[in-house]
Length: 630
Image (cartoon, rainbow, N blue to C red):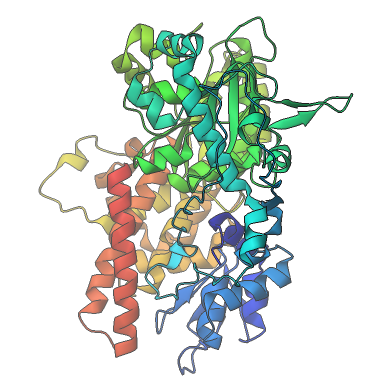
């Protein structure tokens, strides 16, 4: 059984890890965590911590760590599928059925005795025999913990079936693949369709890569080409019935864009009218058992196949295709629907940096505001969203054809970060030179930041960014020499930068909290982290007040902190909220690697050595991905 990652994520989101572990371990609330004696090794002093907000556990003693799935697998020595079935039952989220239970993907094929009706154009419309299409390789459903050996659950043996019965049944995926091949074969027979693609500047290689095709004008061309599969064609919405009961094909005299799911299977089609007077201009397959447009993105499979590094959400099929032909592999588009949280989550799983393109007109601005409100709740720490506002009267396709791909890349790179975009959006609506206008901007901002995840630091960083941009009272700032950070006489360690970030942006503690498991208690950073853990839940929501609060809590280290703040010049390095968050993440990863390597030099046991090695391998992979993706 292959379980999609989004199903695993939904189950984990609905599982209360504290409650789950609390059934096996006596837990006590201590600061921001719940602690108890580790169930994986013998100990008298509790070193096992459960982080409710992160749905994650970690033992400072034996280094055992993971989420709800890993806990149940390790504590009961059970396999992945058994654990997922239990959690599915507890959360009410249904797992996908085995192939032998997938009757909803089958349909009855008509007997083949009666020869099909003669098509209007015999040379272009030929009956297509049902073919078996090999399934794409399943995706590892548990990649979060790839460093733990898991059994292969992707293959489920099939029950033997009666050959006569098998011959009478068809599979929707196979049928859609055959329809795609049929539409591809019709393209060379339509000069109008070929001319349309030529006018749009598409090469023969591009037509082949995207498997573009043509649907003939005949109202019953699919019935004639697939006489045994009419029931299946109706199930996927390619054949419809009129009020009088007469069947007709959904797509006629249109260029065809096959739509693939994340595994590369054809699940539906988009059709574009060749005559602009015909409305609607675009028609998509309706939702069916295999096609759910709110959960699909056109170009996602192709972008992953080409190992896209940067992802850009655009408006239409042709934008995606034109960008891919020009060398931009990571463009995707929704399927005739407005973008939603599912679309954005899919893309954030590809990369933590995402750009969304909008037209520069009023409608584009309205769409940008709507997308902003949808995206804000998804912006966990480490995720970055940019807004690419296109020049007026241009979409990505026309911009590339008229201005060239270099201009497109330059404008894309200049796209503002979310913080700058929001400020520009709100400052256009109000007079920010007046106190009243500033107040209105802050009121709007507060409404938007309430949509951000409460556990993260971004909402606080964004508010502080706006306060400084609007010229409100500056928070406490140490006297900093602009040349101090350039001095080669004083060695500035990563620990010093981590301390400086924490003092300047207290809410970024969530990035550094994990270091408590590895850092030597004698380090200044370790002592600062202990202080943060004690007072973090009591920090005021206001960024300025939180800074004063933490400075007071760390007053015992005032002299050392003053020196560190002077030589790191951290304020200049972290003016943009996104930059502050990015630096905190990078320093945390760097220090984790450093401390893990130190611990590996003298592990206390073979078990700890194995756990430390697994964590180091996973951390090295994360750092490599971060360097690759920027």
